[in-house]
Image 1 (spheres, rainbow, N blue to C red):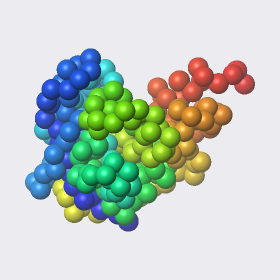
Image 2 (cartoon, rainbow, N blue to C red):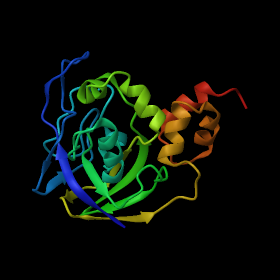
Image 3 (spheres, one colour):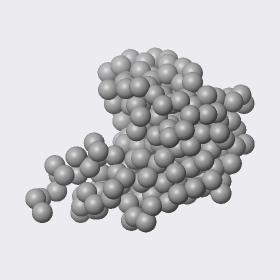
Length: 213
């Protein structure tokens, strides 16, 4: 069992890249935040605005979680403290193996229920946020992407809420495995075709990339 260190929401500000604005730099709030099932390109957290709607947000990327333990590794590498939300995560967790979460795993957080869907793939806006050359390559090689979640039951979350894993599918497809399959280890893509709770768009991508069986 883990807990939520901080709940973070983003208000767009100017950024480099095709949109010119982004809400990636999310700010922690001590107040409870409503969690709902978003429409296309929307965030599951009230007050959290997404600018690049074709590539972010929506039901399968409603909430993004990243572990404090993993942020601390990056803080040492980057030589600076990293507050909750600076990586763009909505939920900064503690005591929870986010990379080891299985696709389809269910979390009870506060009064809401969330389901693990897929890893975060780094983009140009993330590189701009961190301000480090070749950041996407470094992030991919490190292999700790954080997890997107869909909302199964709307409710509220706030800092300090416990995270209880209530269901964990019997599957080898963890967030870490899915991330490596989609980036540096294409031999793992076949696993995504056989895992029942991998999001359909990722399963379709895997099917396009692997030879016919």
